[in-house]
Length: 419
Image 1 (cartoon, rainbow, N blue to C red):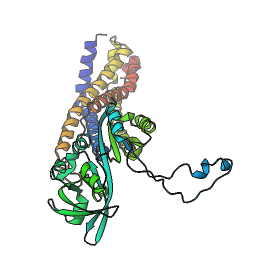
Image 2: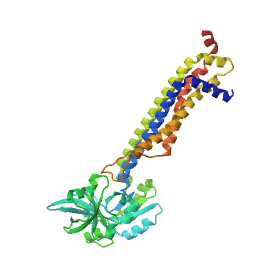
Image 3: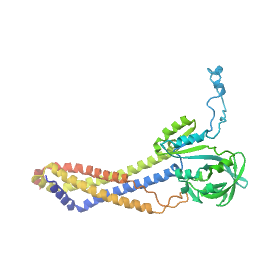
Image 4: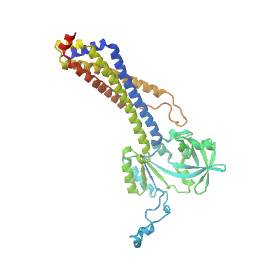
């Protein structure tokens, strides 16, 4: 049968039940709109929450862990090799926190094509002095430009200029939580006490706010040279080497390789922050589940409308078959109706989904805990739109398949005789 004739008949049937057709198309439009908006918002939220940690966390961290020696002298004595030795209250070994031969390690890692960048760090455990009260904390000595390049340091410095850490001697950028407790302001001189008991005066040049209060209450930043002088160490003293890779998924493999090659402890991001990946996966799964459920519900609406159309148009179907239309032709007519509703509804849903996402993206979202965020997060991933229209068309096709088959099996003689 001529495909144009099938299209014309499908169009006539759609116009004959225009209200029901519009309702079915609106159902698909609403489902696709909410599917796209929900996924865009949840994905943007995932990016925001993960970014709070992942943007501030290296893909691989090289350091020396404080731990007891795995081999005790008694285990090395051949006289006791066959005995079962029990040693209690084992103390940590006398190893240093410094990474040995760090200059060679930095040079080797810098030549690795898998590595995006390196940022050395010195971490000093300190006490912030507030009169007679001491607050525990940590000062991170960083290479300022490397820290900014790899971990977007300037985005989290809410007051002051991060480059002043290099320009101003004995300066510090303190966490916002620390500043609130100390009532410190930029330009003030604060004193901190190192683990060895040395009292060091430092000038506050700004505030740091990561969005995670537990970090902001203890953590501050200074230049590498400032922290090295605080600890009485040389310029070669490094306690951490932070590494970012071009491909995050390689982190566990590369970390294990560096652990064996450099004889240091290596922690990959997946191991350090596995809970965040789990949370993102669960939120994404929920979003897809809700969106697909909406599409299935819309599919049932189309199924019911086509079923009612078949019952009401039995005489029309009988006349079509009596005038030479085959069961296959009738099935194509009703599948064309279903696909027309699905395609129109899906295209409209994509447009409204984008507009609703853009509207949400423009709504102000200001909170002191997230200084880098000004509006609600939205991820405009084209895959969401592609998945939405694909599921919309497939759902409406399946919804129209059973009614179309039923219409193709109508016996025109029975219908006409009954009329």
